[in-house]
Image (cartoon, rainbow, N blue to C red; front, side, top):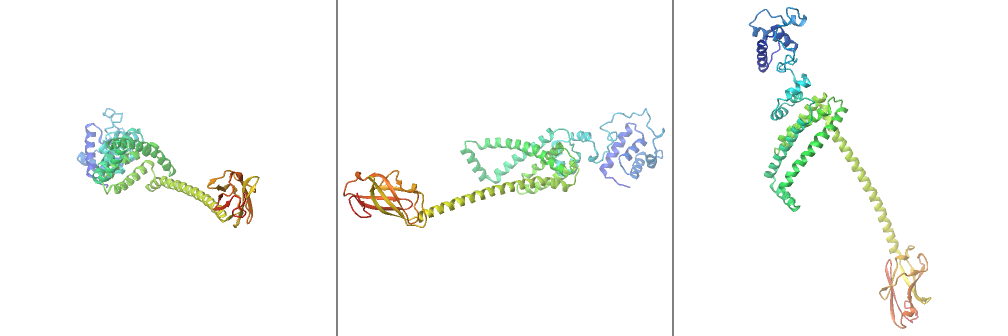
Length: 424
């Protein structure tokens, strides 16, 4: 014979007495117990004790194997209501100790209305399996979301108080920073908590629940989006403990245990499937971050290669320039203008004559005109200056400086007959 705990027996005693007061027949009471899954031997013993051992009650075997006869049927005059009485669990086919998972959605909603905020918090933390068995999966979002928002607000305030007590230096620094920005620290906190509350509700609960429900579907979950959002909302009860210093993180792990219990009952899948369904978004986000990171690194690497190529070209060009050694071979007059002959004595051809700057007595001569387009190795090029010899006085000493890529210069005396002096 199955033995039931004292609470169950006490509940059955109370219920039995209520049925007798309502003039329900003993045989119908006995049949109700059997229909609701109570052990037959226990029912026989229970009824015998309640009726003083009379033999007028049908045995359980009779009740199980025979249909109601005119003798055992309820008298039409018996005051039995045709409308199920919600206060009578036997009329709505639910025993006083029947598992909540067997309750209909309407029965769950009716039972849930009797729970206060504190009842829900206590049951979620201490008996999550029982809570989610009794939690209705429909009924709107308002109640669950308000429950979660309340928990978040309490957690935020308590966390702030703990931070003020344990980390006063950091809080002072943050206050100084907000003051520098022209915002009172009290105002910033007063604005930040409601703002984060809105973000938590919109992103953490509504959007998060929608995304999670998709992953639960991939793992053959049978729950609805509303049911998933309800579980997320009620799991937030653990926030009321996560603010506790030093052990808040450990308590947060217990929140994972609560989540496994809740989702497994709503979606009717194993807790292992729930675990992998919860893990899947994190894996997907990690992969996306990794791909973005690899693309970014590849882009940087490509730019770096381009930069290295450009640097190498610049170095080669600079090396070419620096390897082109020039000397002034002569200074003479051509078409009345001062002309100079430069020779490349370096290792490379040099074609960028536009780089040359020529100074006469420290004054730059604009737009010098080269006679060729490049300096070959060991070749010369004549550059005509926009400066007339007639502008110089005979017998005066002058200096010509050529810059690019290195600085070279020569002196000449107007009227002299030798290089580096030249002719006037």
